[in-house]
Length: 241
Ligand SMILES: NC(=O)c1ccc[n+]([C@@H]2O[C@H](COP(=O)([O-])OP(=O)(O)OC[C@H]3O[C@@H](n4cnc5c(N)ncnc54)[C@H](OP(=O)(O)O)[C@@H]3O)[C@@H](O)[C@H]2O)c1
Image (cartoon, rainbow, N blue to C red; front, side):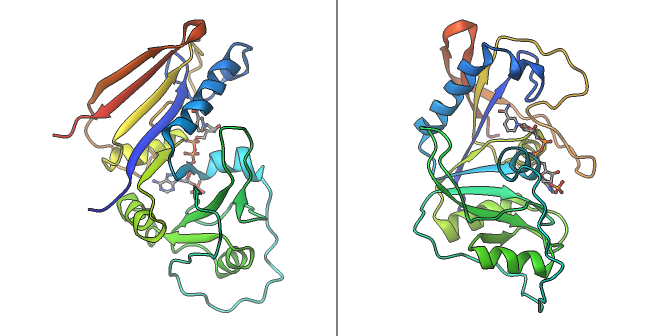
């Protein structure tokens, strides 16, 4: 199968939480900065996040009003928009909820580039939403009728956008889906030396209720680096059996 090499790059507390109050602690900012520097160092042409992460950080809950659009049926086929941008932000948004208003995410730090948006959809998406994406020049690909098949998705990313190295950057549900499908080649983990301690929280890998959890996945430690202020960066490869 021709697909990109996939690195899951994440930051967690000592107790494996990807969200929580520990992120607001003063010393955490240093680790977030290190996380961003590592993102750049990997030099991936594309990064991917789930709908919830994209909404929280990039569309900020903006809702589109598409009711006035008089739309004919649009074929449920992949759409590659014309763009000069050669790096990509991939948003996994099965039913088309994200309120994008432009076809790129601007560079928001010195470690980030301006990236063309590619949306991963299922065929449950409305014609009005597809028309909106086409109108503002966002690319989209289909990953299944009702459920997403990420094996198909990553093959399309390679074939349509020549993405050889993909950075998977959360949240837990999306990471868990990739883990479940055996699609993670490497884990890059920044460990913040704070225990969050909350129970109802999200961890690195989560399983959605409708998905069947597969066997636990073994990893092999390839590198470890001591960060300042008691943090650690760990690089693991998955153990292919
Ligand atoms: N610490 C870190 O390094 C880090 C990194 C990234 C994100 N985060 C945090 O993680 C939190 C969000 O994590 P999350 O796990 O709740 O959400 P998420 O993974 O960002 O997004 C989950 C959503 O993506 C879609 N999706 C993902 N996998 C799918 C699948 N297999 N099948 C169908 N749809 C799928 C679904 O959208 P629909 O609901 O529309 O169906 C699902 O609800 C945010 O608070 C964010 O800030 C932390």
